[in-house]
Structures are given as structure tokens and as C-alpha cells.
Image 1 (tube, rainbow, N blue to C red):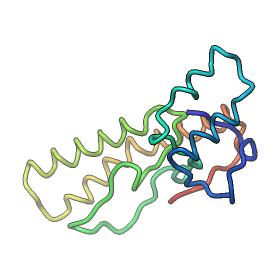
Image 2 (image 1 turned 90 degrees about the vertical axis):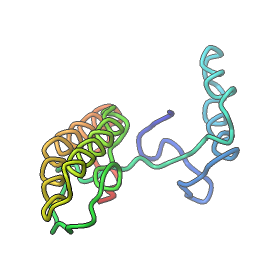
Image 3 (image 1 turned 120 degrees about the vertical axis):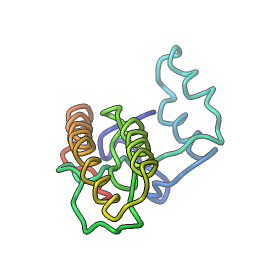
Length: 148
């Protein structure tokens, strides 16, 4: 991952969904004068897997509350997108899946999604806040694009 503060990188047509070879070429161009020992990171990347994405996060205040639906809920980035600075986004999503799986395995009941959402917020909110705080310190960012 190559990250920087807002304005560090410019993308063609301000399109933050550049993927594949154009994204790989952009990363190589941005790092062309970097030390030779670092060049293989960019020169040897798999072009088809490259992506240029704008970093986004859920509200840095945590996961908001909403009226639960008895048959529909959210997990992972759909409910608590995090910057990679905290290193806990994927683990939090896996914890969501494990929690929801345990609740469903015990048998569906009215209020199951509300129970899941309440418990999910108990661990996801601190992770979202920590991830945002670390991104703010690491990248000198005062406000990230909020997805939720």
C-alpha cells in the first residue's frame, strides 16, 4: 500500500476508482525516483491487482445506531469501514461474521439482529475510533471521507 495525505497524489480526471494497469503505472510513475531497493515493490506488482483508492472511514465517532430490521443487518465494511492504519478492519469483519454465525446457529428469534448489532457496536466502535486516530496521526489527516 502506498498512502499519503490529501493532495499528495493526483489521479487522472480525479477518478479514485482507477484499477489494473493504469493504477500500476500511476504507482510506478509516483515512485520513479525512489531508492533502487524499494523499486521491486512497484516494478514487480501484478498489474491486474493494482488499485488506486481513496481512503475512507465510517464516522470517527463510531458505529451509528439505527432501527434494527429483524431479517436484515450489516457486517464488515458495510457497517464500519476503517482505514488500514489501525490494522483491525478485516479482523473486526471476521468477528462480525463469527458473532452473527453463533447467534444464527442458536436459532433465529425476533430481536436477533438487534442483539448482533448491539454487541457488534461494543467492539467495532472502539476499533473505528482507533483506526481513525492512527490515520490522523500517521497521515496528518484532519478529516477523512466518511462513508456512513
